[in-house]
Length: 202
Length: 253
Image (tube, rainbow over all chains, first blue to last red; front, side):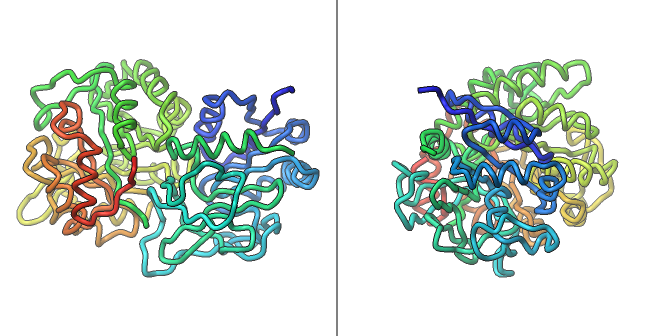
């Protein structure tokens, strides 16, 4: 079997070296790309992203949005990380004019005023459903978060995390996966989750 | 539950990890990449690498060290020292850092914080503040703690946060290297003044000091260097003691 080719979508939002480095470490065939054609030719798609939700607007202007959505609709395994997971929802209060992909209902909102924002550090995963992405991950494992907005818990939520409110930490529906935390920075737990994605079938 | 972070700091001089007491008596503690990997295995939640020589002629050596250290490190990795402009930050991120720490350059020009944050996100920008008790207040010092600025540390922390800093790394110059405990009063004042996380630094000498800075200092993270390098404290053992005191930590680690 030919190893699957993973495209990491580079739309100019922050530093993606860490994500690539983690896939490299796992021996994956991975490429960082700004080109819709490269995304279209890949077997799997990773949409990372840190920073402001409006940065996702760059997807619309570059043809990357269509390439990513077509790949996802065609059943290619898709992993959204942090902002890339939030994009799977309808939108975010952080940038009301910027549309998400709308695969999951609801919008991303700020944390309640009772907690400091951003949410930075290691927090635990409350695993809700059987999840391919979380295969062999011990319940209540800790992973590294850094974000100011949070996505609601929906039917596709397979793990939630508590910080002032309960929010989606992992979503999964068929070939669509998303994680709010940074698996590339979450030590052995994070590497296991990325490995599970590498092994996910179309 | 969000846990309190234990951060291992590597002070690097000419390519080697060193640690002195209040910046003198430097002792060799090893190779940065090996030290970082060992700390990660030992349960460190994060690694900070500070280039304490930070002279312009060793930048390429430093970038090589950052690159080697980052290669096998899958926990957050911050690099500081000698970052004076956006291009310096870009080079450090390119080499594999997840966050950069800026100190003197941010005091000199606070717009640098926003420039780096606009390109790499606020989460990637740590503003390091070296503070010392002066006349009943806390004054900001720059240039490795040598130069007083006349600025109030609490007000500067608030301004840095408003400029787009993602975290504050707060070092008590009075306590640095003394192992006499963190300055909890300084930490608590800054932690209450900003909504971004505050990393307490300077003075770690025992598990009790960490418990104090998390509980009364309200720190989100605590950083230490020498006690970890010379085997005076094992991070796993430290976390055991923190758990016993009901401080939430990443466990097992």
